[in-house]
Length: 176
Image 1 (cartoon, helix red, strand yellow):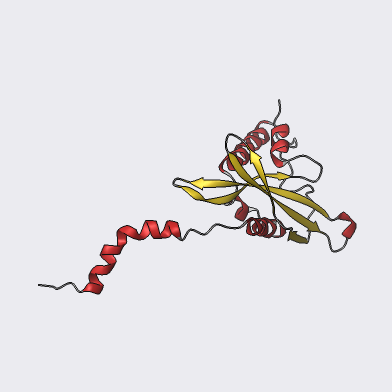
Image 2: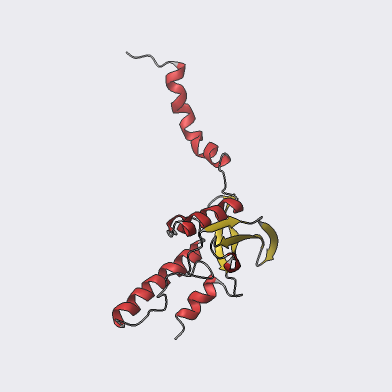
């Protein structure tokens, strides 16, 4: 017959407490880190990392727009599709060889409940043409888990330098 030692039984006794411990230890990505992820995607010409930090509704909007764009291409071969240059993650499609994150700024956004809205400025630079440098702004909102706080920052929209937003561009691209 085997005898259980205290050390052998301890993991079995603590296992039910792991979800609570994990929740207490939850670490949220900061708004500045979200901006850094955005810059990494932009500089690498691969926005895959950014998809993981988008809000649920922005993810849905962009996936739906991509699907509609593909349908348009099939139905209208040879014509430029509404997203012919891809998703407009930034004001200009030209490749910027520099990207830095500005200081996040917080403001309260009044909706049904008071939520926190954070703006993160993304500065794009061109080493060969400094006069072409520009900035866009990420709009971040908190997303709450099933059990409420702590919240996780998510990109809700991108304010483009021309005064429009990513969401507005997508909606306008598919207006009938």
